[in-house]
Length: 301
Image 1: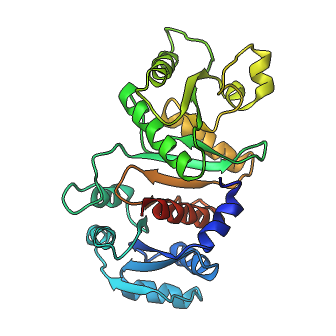
Image 2 (image 1 turned 90 degrees about the horizontal axis):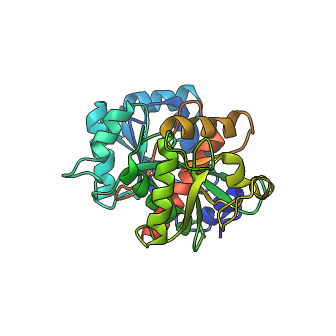
């Protein structure tokens, strides 16, 4: 079991180094993260992008670059080349650099020559539980805008898979809504009830799924008791399933900016770990996200 994010870092440092291919690496922030990640011994990199710009940025920002650079100024071709490195087993994960997310994902999700394995792609944020007894997963905060029932099932399955990789044998999954009771006027509560019953009948495996929950009674035993909510998940969730992207994204950013907690993120469902960080993420958040990708890549071997 990974107890906290520093534990994740230490575990990855003890493993053989994974190689990350960065698409469109001509960016000062990317070079800073590459330098920091290599310095603490987490991973190795192959930079794909405009070699002249990469070298100029490294010089002007005093960054030491000890990795291979593949010269490809065109963003679409850089993304395709970075993905091909993973497909050809020359790299273990692919990372988005200074290019449009749509261009990057198009290369990642190509059916021919990409990392598309036919699974639903979703995003997962991972942070330390308020209680301090392990990590919590929140999904989806970035990919699925308004998932339907079947897509929510796949988001749950992706999250359970990652939870098991980080050490949860049977993770507790809480389906979030504004209220913890079923209300026919709130579709999310109906979806939660159906998904819970699907899990009871074995249609969702590997986790204990329950809902709907309001956020407080999903993460606080005291709040759950106060409202008379019982069950294995109530107040003890390991995974939080947001009803839509808006809710997931707001919770993710609230954790960052109000609670001031570190997060790592993962894009899952592809044939290899995919790393997408925000330009507003701190260097530590980006390093933690890379560490998570390396740990997931280790589990995939």
